Structure formats: C-alpha cells, structure tokens
Length: 456
Image (cartoon, rainbow, N blue to C red; front, side, top):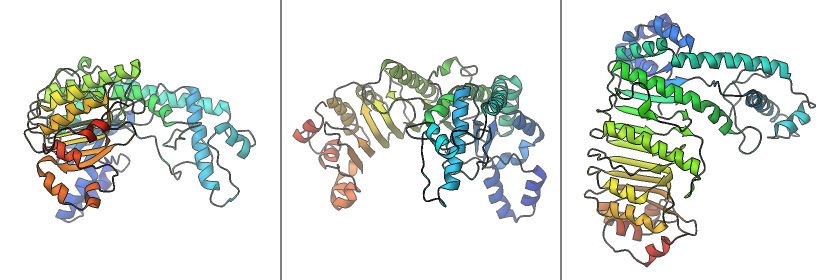
C-alpha cells in the first residue's frame, strides 16, 4: 500500500509559499510528493479542515484517496485499555533501560515486570487509567458518530467530486504496531499510541485487531456510501482495513449504486480475526471464509468485464472461490495466498479467464478435499490456452510437509530447464522438474507426482 501523507498540521499558506518559490519542474515533483496520496479521516478536526481547504488547488496532483480512521475503538474494554497502557509503558522502560544496564532483565509478563521494576506498583493509578479510558471512549464514540453522520458523508462526497481525476481508492485503519519507542513518553500516560505487541504473553496483536474490527466495518460502509454518492470512476479498489468478517456488502447503503464497471484492479486483504492456515476450518471460521468469498463475488460481478488484476491474500480466512462462476474475460493476474482454495471450483473459474497471464499461489492449501485434488488446478494450468507465468511459493504440501516452490513460464519450459540448477531452484529445496514439465504438457502424471499428492 502506498504511503499517503496528510500534512494536516502544516498551514496551507506555508505549503503554498514553499511550492510557489520552486522552479517549475521542482514544483511539480514536490506537489506530487505532498499531495499524491491524501487521507479522508473520520474525525471532527479533519471535517473542519476539509471545509477550509480548497481541494481544487491540489486535485491535479492527487493520485490516491485513502479512507482511514485513527487508532481508536468504541469496542475496547477498560481491561484491554489498561493492558495497552501498561504495555506501552513497559516498552518505553525496556528501551530506555536495556542498553546502559547489563543486568536488565526483560519480561513480557506485565505482572512480573511491574513487580521487578516498579516494586509492584504501576506508575499510574487505576483511577488515572479509568479517567484516561473515559476520555478515550469519548473520542471513540465521537468518531463512531462521525462515521454515521450525514455531514461527514456529504463532506467526503464533495471532496471526491472535486478530485474528479482520482480513480484509486483504499480502505485502511491506522496501524497500531510500532517496535521503536521514540514516540512514547518516558513518564507513562493514558494516551493510546502505536506500540509493540508480545507474541505469546501479556499483550497480543489480536487485542488491537479485534477492537479495530467494528471500526473498519463502519469506515467501509461510510466510504462506499460516499463513493456512490459522488459517482466516481474507480480503477483501483483496495480493502486492507480491520473488519469483523460479517461482510454482507450487498446490503450496504449505496452498494447498488456503486459503479465498478471500469475497475481493473481489486485487492482484497481485510484484516479479520483468523486461524492459522488449516485444511479444516471449524464451523465459524468457515462461515467467515464463505462470507468473504461472497464479498469478493459482489465486487467481481460489478467489475467482471473490466477486471485485470485480482489479489486475495493474507489476514482473512480463505475458502475461495465459491460455486458461482463469474466470467472474467480480461483478468490477467490472479494472486492467492495464505489460505485455502476449492480446487475444483478454481479450475472451473480458470477456464473462464481466457486472458490470464500470471498465476500466483503463496502458502496455499486445499479445503477439506484429498490432496490429489491439486490435479484439478494443475490441469487447469496445463490446459489453459495461454502460456502462464507461474509463481508457486511453498504450496502443494505433501505428507512430509514439503512444499513446491516454482517460478517459470509454461510455454518456455525449455528455457527454465536450460538454467543452471542454482538459478532454477533460486535457493528453494523443492523445484523438481516434473512439476514444470507436467504443467507444460511435456510429461504425463507419473509416480513422483502420485507419491507427492497422496493424502496426508
């Protein structure tokens, strides 16, 4: 995702003076750097700023609009708020004291850390933390109100109309992860800032992701309504914000009016509470994956005649595609990763992608089906009318937990075979030539492949 600076706190007069005193070619470069990507934030301050700014002055330089929210959530409980505040304080203490103190002992357990380094008393009392939580919730509830407020939607829609040449749109929530501590105060306070997450103990990333999920849902709903109201032309549609996994996009206000008929690029990477990759999702996780597939289908139906690039990867349970087949005559790039595919369905879909050029699978497995069902996908590649650029990264796992890594073009297998072995494998352990030879139609299904694809 491209960086999208906002510069909300710099006076417009200062920016104008800087730009007007530059040479013409430098002025163009700086303007594109400053305003190439802008964010529409769901805060009262941003709404006031938007009302004062002349969007038309920067519109020629804007390339991307990102709908975003600050890290604030009305669903964060007091207990989890306190956990975040303590975690931030520990992060700062560790970074300040670790270098000069060779006897410093780090602990990820909050209780033990407080006992060891603060004599059992956290520097902030529970009363102060409670007061900080109430302030935090006041801000979060205000943001919730703004996301539902027609004034915000009118303001955002007005800005989008002024940005008439912008066709790239992204939905994101501000990342709460930050490993450094220079932004954290030495003396702990009750302001939630980006912070480090423990992998296993006291403060996991899932806490912040779960809190941000309903905010992401509300942000997406508000953004869709504004895009529909402004009647914009969309060429790039990226969904990378936290979400609950409820989806149901077709029921959103404005979804029916949202025009995706000229959309060439769609990236679906919502950050949903998920299980690690598994062939057998439990019921609720599979329901989330099915709802995600329905959300993807809702976009593909609207963009089927224009879509050229589709990426579905990471951060959301995947069981794709569904049973409904959508013909995608212009699709050139298909990238799937970190989840499960329905092999028979995918093979059927690929037959409806006559323009496909690039096919990527990254850490991808099969849902429920026996391992031999990989043949549906392999044969769809083998029988595709075009030569395909294949990029497999740790996929097609066998019963020894070995995976296939392969990068080559199906109609140029001889070029791949002519490469030195170190270039063919590119450092990968498993790049047996039988895989590209089969995908290119040079050999038939053999004992090696049968042994690899036997059930785990």
